[in-house]
Length: 155
Length: 271
Image (cartoon, rainbow over all chains, first blue to last red; front, top):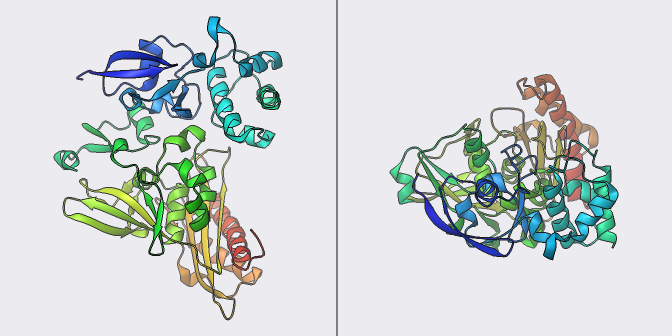
C-alpha cells in the first residue's frame, strides 16, 4: 500500500513518519515510536489497553487510523510523567494503593481515570466504575483501582 | 460522493467503532475506505420542530449536548448504555444507524421517536423514515452510492413521555433486549393518544411494535397487558447470549416497565 508522510504530535513532540493508510494509531505508536505503554489487547475497542488521549479525550488506539491522528495532540501515559520519568500524582496513587499488578491495563486505566477527574472533579465511586467499565483488569479485582482514583480525586 | 460511486466495494469510515473492529478481525475487506470525518463539523440544531443531528454527531455529544437533552431526552439517556467512554468519544449517530446492528440502542430510540434520516445519493437528497432503513442483520436499504448526512427527530412535545430500558450481562455489552418507548397523552382525557414501543435484540433488526396492540388506557394493568401482547407477537431466536424464550420474557417485562415510566413522565409524576 502506498505510504504517506504525516506529522504526529505525541506527548508534545512532533514526529515525521511514513505510514500506510491502513496502519492504526496503535501500530505506529507501539511499533514505530516504541511506546510500550500503548498495548494491543483485543483489537475491538473493548479492553482499553490501547487507550490514548486524542486532543485530550480517551480513544481506542486500535480503532483509530494513524492518518486520522495527523496534526492532532496524542498523549500516552508516558506523556503525563515529569522530567526524569517522575511519576504523575495519579500513578503515585496507583502505586500506593497496589492498584497495579501485572501492569498491562495500567496506562489505559490511568488515562481514562485522569480524563474523568479532569471533567468531573470529584467523581463518585459509581461514576468511576462507569467510566472504567471499558478497561479490563485481570489481576486486581478493580477495588484497589477505584481506591487509587478516589485518593487522587480527593488530593 | 464521487469516490463512493466509483466502487461497489467502498466502505464509509465514520467513527470507526464498528467498522474498525471488523477490519482488525478481517471480517470486512473493502477495496476502498472513505474517511468522512473531516467532511462535516456542524453541531446539533433545531428548526421547524425537528432536532437535526448531523451524521457525524458523536455519542458523547448526544449524551451531553443541551439541545439533545432538551428535545430528545430519550436518546440522551439511552446513549449511556452505548459502548464505553472511548467508543462514545468517536462513535457517531450516522455510523451507528448505517451499521444497522439489531441490538443498537441508538437505532431503537430513532425508531421510537419516529426519526427520519437524510440520505444523499447521486440523484440528490431524500428523507427515509428509520422504520424503512433496516433490511436485516447489519444491512440497510440504502444503495451503495448513498450516504446518511443527517438524522431528523421530532422535538419533544407537552404531555409526551419517554423511557428506555435494557438488559445486559455486563455494562457496555451489546443489549440482550432493549426497549425504547415514546407516548403522547390526549389533552382532554389524559389517555394514550399515541404510543411507540421500539425493541432491539428480538429480531434481525430493531422493530416497532404494532400500535394496535396498545389500548388508550393508561391503567397499569392495561399497559402490562399491552406489553404481553407485544411480546407474544415476537419470535426472537436463540443465540449464545440468551434463548429466544428469555428474550421474549425480557421484551414483556421491559416494555411494561418502560410504558409505565413513559406515562408517569408524560403526566409529570416522574422525571
